[in-house]
Amino acid sequence: MAKVAVVGAGFSGLAAAWRLRQLGHQVVVFEKESYPGGLAAGFKADGWDWTLEHHYHHVFLSDRAIKNFAKELELERELFFRRPKTSVYYQNQVFQLDSPTSLLKAPVLDGVTKLKVAATLAGLKLTPEFGWRYLERLTAKEFLLKTMGAKAWQVLWQPLFEDKFGEYATQINAAWFWARIKARTPSLGYFKGGFLNFAFLVMRRLKKEGVRFYLDTSIKSLIRQNQQWLVKTAKSKRDGLMKFDIVLLTLPADQVARLVKTPKTKKLPWQKKLDYLSAVTLVIESDKPFFKDRTYWLNVNDLKFPFLAVVEHTHFISKKYYGNKHIIYVGKYLRSSDQLYKLSAKKLLAWYQPWLKKLSPGFDRSIRSIWRFQAPFAQPVVGTHHSRLLPSIKTPLPGLYWASMQHVYPWDRGTNFAVKLGLEAAETVNLKLKIKN
Ligand SMILES: Cc1cc2nc3c(=O)[nH]c(=O)nc-3n(C[C@H](O)[C@H](O)[C@H](O)COP(=O)(O)OP(=O)(O)OC[C@H]3O[C@@H](n4cnc5c(N)ncnc54)[C@H](O)[C@@H]3O)c2cc1C
Image 1: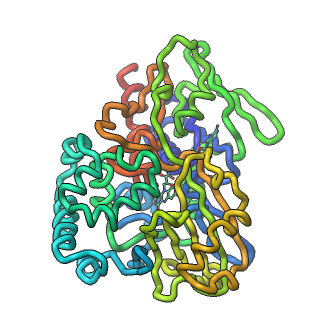
Image 2 (image 1 turned 90 degrees about the vertical axis):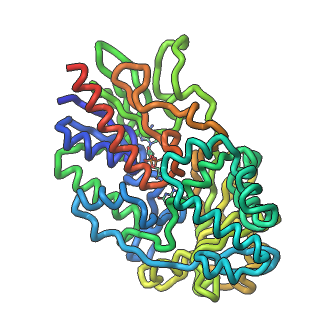
Image 3 (image 1 turned 60 degrees about the horizontal axis):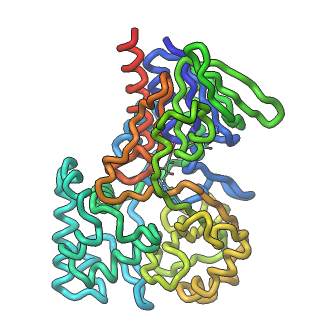
């Protein structure tokens, strides 16, 4: 039995802690926030019964890892599915686009383009998992122009790539696109009480199994000493030092680089340059709905707009859980150096207001409250041959393991893949320990 520290109580850390404990190890989880859930965590405003994610979240029916994880923990009844409406805004028109029938009816696209789009999407759905190895050699732009044609690229995909990846838009590989299509299902899942509630239930279950949690406790440094890791923690009022045989970090590269104190000469995986985008999300609570047609998710396929999507959460989950108020997210990916990233909620709303008015005239009068959340590390950039850059879970430093969003590939990031990665990291740690003994 080894003494293992898991740094981060996001879904990777929670899943890893669960499996490590099952495998018989002594596990301690450190989390800098006062709650678990990481990027999928949320908050509860006055008058709400359920928590709400800082950034819009749902899972897909195909998300096996998180479904099985909930089942293993006897929490499967916390997850439920329904089918909300997804639409696209293009050239002053909003049209539903979430099924073959809605594609056939979509304006803007001609018949031949619609057939090409349908055939390509069906082909990608049927492409077996190993297919990504071929697809990662091409950029998504090359692939989509070849298969769906210029019109589909211009209307459906170019705005999505440019909004999501900015200057990297044309570099993203076709395997990323495949993974998005392959995993996507029209039915979407959500946890009763919100993802934060689910994370707390997982934490409670893990505690019952003997996992120790230190919330509100940030890891400041890791030093290798006498075959062990010396973990320096900072809690609101006191600092501490603890020793572990194994440390598993579930943080992005730049945070790992700041923690691990090693001789400068060593080449370490987190020093590799892997680009990523940040996200800023505006959350609006209002008296009236934003969309009159019950749209849940609107992709704003118009690059003049300063945001990528408007997501009306209460067209997916009943407003009765949020004091009968309507909840709307406005999402944007950008570089953290962008001036929009630094704006307060009020200033961000003022910036977005003319554009929101175009989508829902008069909506501004019903706004009650606003919040703004940011995620510095939100979306990894995956270019061609990305698999060559992938870090491994076992690092060159003895007893130090690393499993972060940067390890999730060819699938796109997500709580499902965070769980899958966490379980895999736990198995990797266990296997290495077995070989050693
Ligand atoms: C805008 C946006 C929308 C998204 N939408 C979806 C969606 O619809 N569905 C979906 O499934 N996923 C979605 N995701 C992705 C999903 O949230 C992530 O893939 C997943 O939560 C990552 O989990 P993780 O455990 O790997 O990392 P994280 O959640 O980042 O966890 C890392 C944890 O480490 C903690 N930490 C950091 N530094 C320290 C330190 N020094 N000491 C102690 N603790 C530390 C952090 O506080 C955090 O809790 C979205 C993400 C974003 C940004």
